[in-house]
Length: 124
Image (cartoon, rainbow, N blue to C red; front, side, top):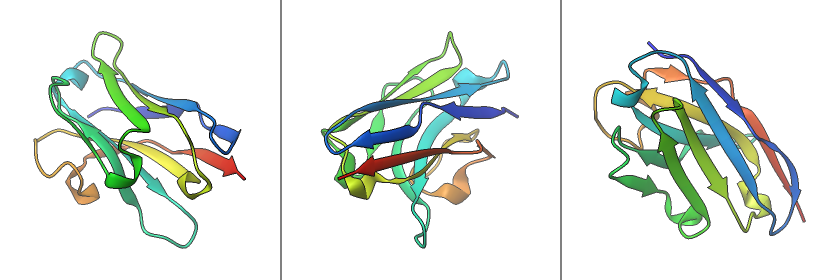
């Protein structure tokens, strides 16, 4: 089991940047795949990006490719989502999640642990 705490959300203007962090507790963090999801009001939770335990493979949803960068630092038990060129449609609550058994990284039901979420608002 890991516990996850997100930080770094906030209000930013169109074209701005934010870096989200997800700090994990637990000594087994480095064995977990990690993902970021987001949920806008009235919409379903959607996959944003995911990274395998080693960091060797990273996946992005199409709408954020080239703008968002996901990374992890296993020594610090932290994953980071660098978000550049933000758009109003990126506005959502962003959630960090941990997957113990490798599986479909874009499927939220495959994740075992979730953070409480952090709000990202992009104004035009």
